Amino acid sequence: MRAPLDRIDLKMLRLLQDNGRLTNAELAQSVAVSPATCHRRTQRLFDEGYISHVRAVVTPQKVDRGALVMVGVVLDRSTPESFADFEKAVAKLKFILDCHLVAGDFDYFLKIRVGDMADFNRIHGDQLIALPGVRQTRTFFVMKEVVDNAPLDF
Amino acid sequence: MRAPLDRIDLKMLRLLQDNGRLTNAELAQSVAVSPATCHRRTQRLFDEGYISHVRAVVTPQKVDRGALVMVGVVLDRSTPESFADFEKAVAKLKFILDCHLVAGDFDYFLKIRVGDMADFNRIHGDQLIALPGVRQTRTFFVMKEVVDNAPLDF
DNA sequence: CCAATATCGGAAGAATCTTCCATGCGAGCA
DNA sequence: TGCTCGCATGGAAGATTCTTCCGATATTGG
Image 1: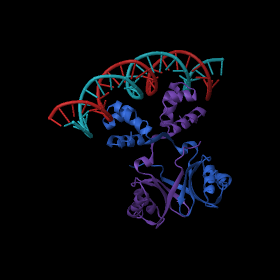
Image 2 (image 1 turned 120 degrees about the vertical axis):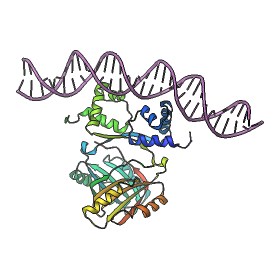
Image 3 (image 1 turned 90 degrees about the horizontal axis):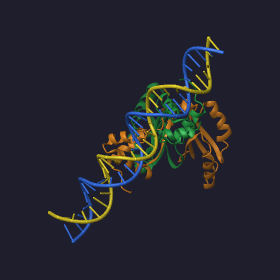
Image 4 (image 1 turned 180 degrees about the vertical axis):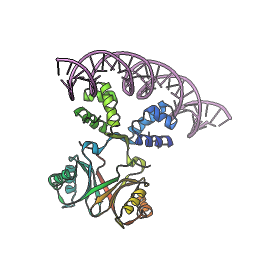
């Protein structure tokens, strides 16, 4: 089961990334193998973790999450405990889509979705600056989403 | 068809966001309606754009895209043409997952996936600073992905 | 209170999934 | 070369699921 992916597997990955609702029959035809073989290969892609999961992409504007904000965070101390506390608290805040520990002028970068700026201001005051160990935050309101969560190119 | 989403629709949205492979029968049982009704409601979620698409999430590390980098970009000029040129060029670079026009110290924020730091350094020199109108970039290597692309909470 | 409209669940044919099995291809070896 | 072993493949078939039509029920508006 450690065999590398061949050209057919890669094509299947790309097709499923573009459309996770493809039926096994359609996918089989697109990559020119039988449905049985396609089914086995697809299962392998899941079993071996090439595909972690399949997700319906909900349009943020349709569920009142049309505002996107990037936030840079600097912590008081750079100790492992400080980082751990912060990360643990971040995981509970569902409006945080991304949280990455980075090298540079910030400790963390956050990507946040909320309804509007008023929502963000309230959340910022209530929950972000209240996160453990936060010294300062820098907010970057997104004025235009040029590309958001593009599919992986491989 | 402008009816707002009821509790059942919202639950379906959340379930499909967590697992886009749910069969209609499973989904129907989870929200306690008949398969026929569930099928109609699901179709509406797609037709009216609540779900823009369904995507298989490919594990970046499995396809040699394990390195994540955030980049802040400042342009030479802040003219509409300058922005348009930049955005047009960005759309062609498939390793750019996010590109957002922001308010603050940068003009744009980019989220980039590549194989490793060496890849990024080459791409940075070859393609990023060569983007039209770029005055300077600031790179933030991601050292730890705490939360990446979390599902929308609504 | 009634009519119009929308939404529902059941049912059934069509399509799909999932697995078993026999075939064929290629690697390794004498 | 000729042999065997291991593995991936495609066909087939039962089980499941999808998709749509239908009549019944609930909701809305006059």
